[in-house]
Image (tube, rainbow, N blue to C red; front, side, top):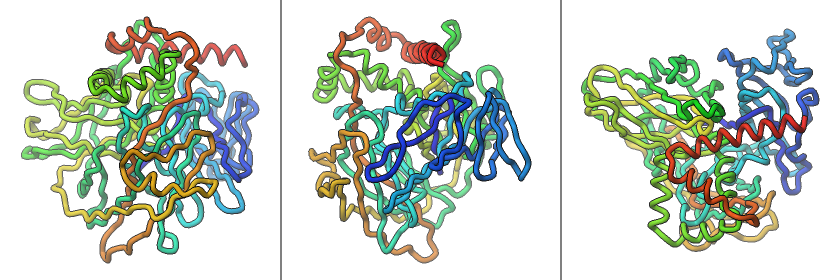
Length: 496
């Protein structure tokens, strides 16, 4: 299961589509937010942890307040009491409809600036055809910002449905970057278990007895269980730390029931990179100025530089997160969670050795840097893995929006790439859908491999002092993110 998200403040998501009549992301002020035909505010999550859903036509924001209909009654709430907006967007042309639901985190500032176009800096968007429309369903290979960081990604396609014996996907470039897709294939998993999910290597795990956390709290003792116990519309997503004297990391501890004889646990995490964390990829890259291409080259062709960068990423935990298990001798790292998104939160299995965890409870600890992660749910499953029948489907057709054949560029992992250099570039893929096996459930995953290069302003000099500080001082990157967040707030307030 997954959730689509973004971060920081009220966002009107309007993405330009080729051959469709669509508006682009624009800036609006709070009093001007209404319900354009292409989208609507369909709900909110309050800071008190309430999930409020609105009757059509949705909500409007005026004079610092949100107004809507709930159960046929007038509803009003101050913006400073809202943690997250839920936006529904549909864009229609003569040939197709594009659907997207996104959750918008308000953050600590009750302003209304449209920053998705300015901040979302990772991954192509993948849309699944559900039999009626293309629906946003996946964001592969986040943070792979040059070929030396190219990686495989696995995403559950919850919206995909067979149509006349075919599965159909659309891949789209919707940010200022060039995307290079090496491989796209579908993995069809037929199973008798209640659910299946993947780890970050593409291994499929059956889930038969999933148990939610029984307790969750942060370093201040704040109860996070309402936010983390289920995959729902309560998503824990704090802002970057702006206080220079405060700790830039959270310390989140979760408790789960555990059979005393358990030696292995499948930790099921629904989480992803925040939008602000995604933007920090670009912000840090821009510090390299005119040296950015030389840096790309050094990562692409030098395995030692790749290893140094990976070690830094593991230390900082900006886009990969260490999972600790409490054992007799203290906290021991037993797993790693890769980030994804920022708009899609995916279920991901982290397989944990719990043979050294004593007693009838399992205690998990994570220490994410503030502003870089969004967490929806944590659960565990101790059941043995049941058989899962997996079929790999290769595309039978792939064409871009001009009709050019791109099949050879995505059919296998090689030196040939489907490149998408411009905003609005789109590709359309078809796969033969196998018949559903009698008595079996089906879950469909997308396996992609690729990377992207952000379009940065590389004309100026490199800020080597800041870069050195970020690369050598622990948590300096998270501190940098907080400083940039303050700057963004100040610049926005000055424009209001």
